Image (cartoon, rainbow, N blue to C red):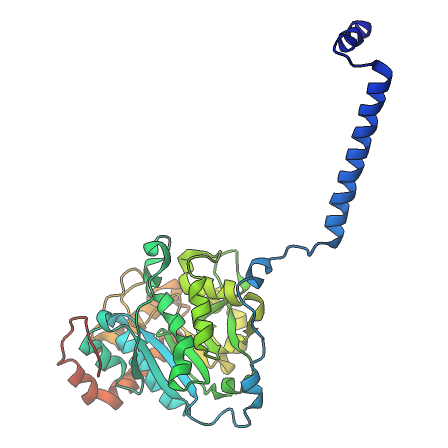
Length: 364
């Protein structure tokens, strides 16, 4: 059989001894070169990491040079506490947040980013009643018409306009989501010489405590040029779209974020995940973040506006009836804060209720 095979090759003009030897050595040399090339690449190339893609998005310094030169970082109008107001359902929450800032005697000025066409005169009046200065901004639409974005986060890309606050004199910004409550002064954050800082996120599922940060509380040094760089990446960067701006910022800043202690963003998920840990940090908490249950909404599905007269009872009801009552103490804290807010600003708040509740407001 072998003799017949080689006769066939000979008929094709292939000489058995010389051709076979040539083919064999060619294969050996080719294999050797491939092995050498693969080995060289594996030894000399930069190893791929989870940060590889993020490195290509920007060229930022972790430390802000201007902040390092500031000899009085806790003084002056350049320190700003900001929040966002994109729907009337969060008006009383922001009013309560504003009063909680009064209670801790913060020295920073306050700004509230709002989308004029999406909030009513009544809502804007309520939200700004306790000290937040309204700051109108244009909405930043989500990529792909919002496909894949969780519906409650559909407007959250507009938060990126925080980086534009340099244009109104801000040199350091602490951003607080509307569903937060301040329990202790945190002005020390304005002394941070860093460009960006946030607290690690927490999940109640198997993810648990993660290195990715939660965007409900942020510290940042605003730069208009940086804002433009971030916006350019909205549609092109690789991130989980359902978490909107939080996922984008985690991608953009991944290795360039200073992680703050949990006391600066006491996410209720911490208590759900580890009650002992919550107990350990409870007396150091500066900001409570009502992520899992919101005291100012009837439930987590529909953010329906709760009348002011029912807010206190609503917070207590949800605290006792949901998640086995583990958040009853934190919900009571919010209920008391709202009670103080209403007592202090009753006349102003009730006058707000006389205004139109139709969305579409230009300015105060």
